[in-house]
Amino acid sequence: MRKTLFLSAAVLVAAIPSVAGAGTPDASVRAKLEASNVPFEVDSDGDYKVVVNYKSEGRTQLVYVRSAVETWGKSRVREVWSYAYEGEFNALIGNRLLEASYKLKLGSWVKQNDRALMVVKLDAGADAEELQNAISFAAEVADEMEKELTDGKDAF
Image 1 (cartoon, rainbow, N blue to C red):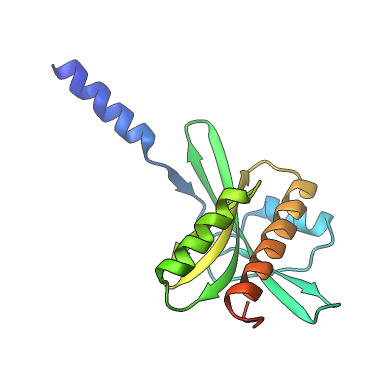
Image 2 (cartoon, rainbow, N blue to C red):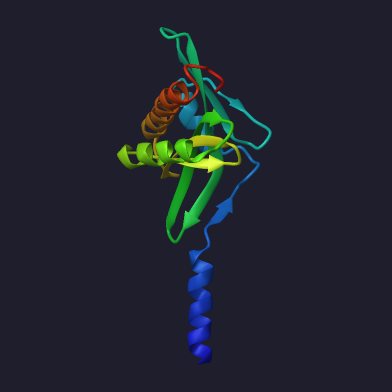
């Protein structure tokens, strides 16, 4: 019985994702953004803020590249976030985001307090081009959802 209990505890500990480096800007992200000539700022959490500018539409979309890397077993994952909605989170909003998540090929919609955000999770070792693609994808999808849910407002 003791052996089973130990194995169960080991499995439980292995199932809890860990986060490394929160608060410290990841130099590898900086290098990848600079290699792609992507302008950015670093926020107080050490995450990278990128503003995607849709000049032809007069819109912008804010994207965060998290410095923190989460692990699951041998997998190392970095998140790219972009907000699309802030306000009452009713069933209509939740269901719309679930429907949209189903159709996505990359990323998914998540709820953070009263906000909806697009989260793309990619390998922490992704190269500059893959990171740029994740940023572009998150921005485009979030901006389209923002337009839909806010009657065209551009808050993010």
